[in-house]
Length: 304
Image (cartoon, rainbow, N blue to C red):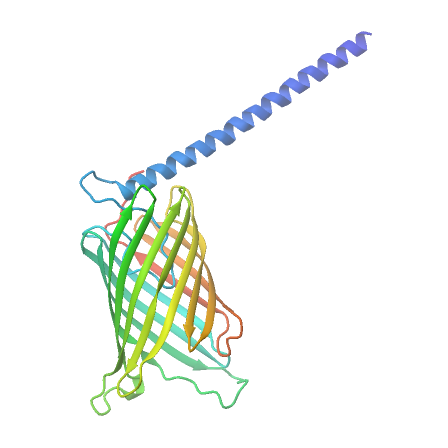
């Protein structure tokens, strides 16, 4: 009888200890969750409402490969430098790309950009197709762009924008200086952007518009672009993971590239973005690709 009573008391004590530990763990989990929510709310508030006299701005995750001209809802004085490098498998030769760009906002909600992209090519030791023709190395273009955020809704955490990119295409490097040639044509690219943040962490964005290439003395060539983006932004930071889905319709054919990506902050005003390109469907001359973007914002600073 005494043994049974002692066993029952031990069981009750053990159950009480387990229950207390479980409650303590749950309290710690809840505390961590609340702390993360508060940290995220503070960070979003710092970006969107740092001063009462500034216009509203909604924090959105910006795609890393086809990036925006300036932050959606950009504020006067914002500026940013980008340096990008990448490589693409072209089924017989490798394509190396590089770019340098400068973005700035002279007034609220209006951004401008100047970019110079460069593309270089190299043969491989063994070629699958001896008839394959490798393009010439070139400075692609002088790219001038603008973007206007015409609707910023804090209530719906959404932003709409219109933009335009104009590219002055350079001739290939081996033709520079021959016959006084410098440019070979123009590219006209109006576009529309719609972005929405769902709760504090989930972001969606669509970027779409026609891309019209007109070489001198040739007919124009039209490609329609539809780029969709899904990102998860880490609580209390600008770090994110996500996927950019680049879709182009050209001559009635849809071409798609999936670009999983991540962005990590190295300092308050310095970030790095890493992108992998995975072609979908039958892309005869394109394999896997990689891209890296370094982002420097001279005046960006958080307070927590």
